[in-house]
Image (cartoon, rainbow, N blue to C red; front, side):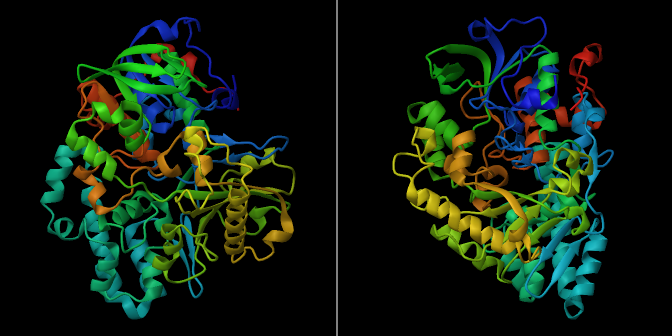
Amino acid sequence: MSLTDLVIGATEPAPDQTDGHWSGEHWDAVVIGAGLGGLSTAAFLATNSQRVLVLEQHRVVGGNAQAHRPADTPYDFDVGVHHVGECEPGGRMRTLTDALGIGDQIEWLPLDPDGFSTITLPEVRFRVPVGWEAYVERLVATFPAEEAALRRCVGVLREVAAQVRAPHTTGWSAGAKAALSSPTTLRWGRRRLAKLFDTCGLSPNARAVIAGESGGYALPPSKAPVAVHAGFLAHHLTSGAWYPRGGGQVLPARLTQTIQAHGGVVRTDVKVDRIMVEGGRAIGVTLVDGTEIHAGAVVSNADPKRTYLGLVGREHLPPRLLRRAESWTMALPLFTVHLAVDIDLRERLPNTTQWIHPDTDVEASYEAAYAGRIGDRVPVLMTSRTLKDPSGAQATPHGQSVLTLVAVAPSDRNTWALRAGGPSAGERYSHHAGYLDAKERLTESVIDTACLVIPDLRAHIVHREAATPVTQERFTLATDGSAYGLELASRQIGRFRPDVKSPIPGLFLTGAGTRHLHGVVGTLYGGAGTAGAILGRDLYTEMAAGAVFADPSLRGRFQAPHA
């Protein structure tokens, strides 16, 4: 079976299991959703002797880690895996995949270490290098008149990052104690990034460079906590940015293989209607066709709002939890344009992620999205699978390349001409004139921004298509079409963000909406946290000590197939 077979189309049952009785069995755990958080949780449970069933409503596993191949084309596009941090030997990503027995089945390709990200502003182009020291020195070289201010600002970010990242390796309790011992973190962690910029006295261009990658968490400096930006910077400054050979779909493929090899079952095209709650405890799930599946633990990879207000239902929520769930705000969603061009981008661009800003005022760029408007000048993340994985370029016609452009977008349903509850409620939207007009206008704005780096881009486009927040909601059922889960504002981070262990006994959360946050490493490590909560064990400490949970006798069953 190829990687594509595992990710696109219905998955196969585990060895020695038949397809006819999975819905009638009692499972140790049933996982709702096969995004990276759900698959990671299931893999850690399965490799620790738990009987696990994963249910995915889409025909494809992986969530935002899946690949997309438009019909009748040779082009593969990544939906959401554009670059990943901490993939160096000994890094968190490799520690996790080694623990699941698949570390040697994923090859990580580094982006340019002297500029894994490139921030383009009207007056400045800044290449982000690996390492905090190299980063601050390049900032000083770019803005020499602001040396003292820059060193102070980066110093605060670096110290806060060291503390906020502690829970990922020591557990949340120990991490919280470490943070409380840091005066800098206590002072700055939850304060706004814009306030730090003001205190340090940074110029507009310096601010824009430091905040230039804020699209990675979809918040402007006036709303982003210092802790969030510091953690985001550190994630990549640690060892740069990496990309899995073969594309983002390699990750869900390997996780699916591991689950199945250890007796778990992954089913696609199966939609959960409700989480069953009896006597105040989650006991299983009910499918849309009325089938009931019982389990000792229920894990929801849906976002927390949809989990509590939709799958569980208000009638089962304690009053305090209901108030919290109703008050949560989702992160701004994303708008993605996939392009194929008739030029070889390797001859034009370095292997870097481009963050392109038509204006220096990063703050203003978010105003249109918050107001529900389609902006004329939008910042864009531009990335190319052709640049990151040259071996994968062989699948693209000779001399051609693929390109992905991403921008934050409005979540307001009126912007997208939705009138009947949206795709999660069954609304058909793709032919609405208002929807098509908004989609086309934002597509044009996004391409305009990309032309600031590739001026003749439009002349070389041979294929183009766009995915809106409505598309995201249709395929992942995410509230407001948000790929990042709950907004990372101060009132929704740390202990104020949902824990993986819910107040409802037997119900656990995983994925971007939990305190483990979004992103590939965040959701994968969050899956380990959820599995640990179910098992009553500290899997982080065990992984750090070199534990391998996968059964080596099953090695042949989750050996990598040829892509």
